[in-house]
Image 1 (cartoon, one colour):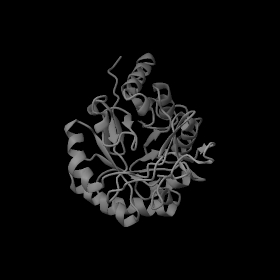
Image 2 (image 1 turned 60 degrees about the vertical axis):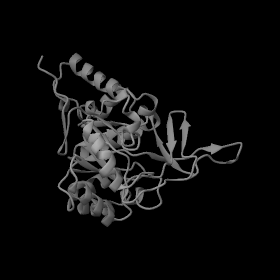
Image 3 (image 1 turned 180 degrees about the vertical axis):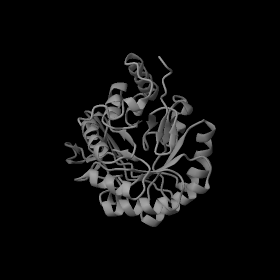
Image 4 (image 1 turned 180 degrees about the horizontal axis):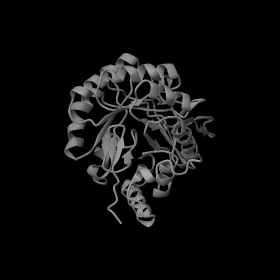
Length: 306
């Protein structure tokens, strides 16, 4: 059997393997430095970063659910200048392939941040956060309207030569229409899905648990929704997909690949098991060995009913 090739071309972003740390779950990597070899994962999508620092939403901001987690962090981050000057050099020194995740409050702000990243050294691609459900300005507002998606992607593509990958929201009626708008605007890849809007109630206090009332549901509970949406988009759009939503095992990851993802992102599971990325990658490799597969593209989309 020939040697197994786990590398992926994600719309121009070269990944040494298909396992990516999802934005929001990994921060800027410093909390995971003792647990994860940054060079061993396909890429790290850093914390959603805004033009200026943000304090985020009022607490409580996280609550555990039976099959996942609700969060309403509200894009707490130090701003793009701190990301570029403080966090990016450390990530690069650790051997990470870095995908910047940016969240603007206007089309112009998205383009401005893309240009700043383009002028810096060491970012492999840009993920557009047009799907965060926990902020009042920007976020899901952009990702719910095909016209705005087209406008944002076009503006960012005009501001950078880096691959551009919008992260799509599951909180829409027709995610295929959103994906088509991104493709028509020149997106290089798609990232999907972000969290589903949900809430929890404190029955003793008789009020919502989260300070923001609503939060984004992640974890195993959303996996069937994510699989369905990636399946639908992969049938209609030719862009490679970074797929995620509740992956905790290699079996989960293989399901995402088989419905059309070219690579997979792991988020909530890393809070429970920081070493899960290595386990997922090992499981994918083991599956390929058992089935005598040498390339991942033999798996991508394999479960689609033609």
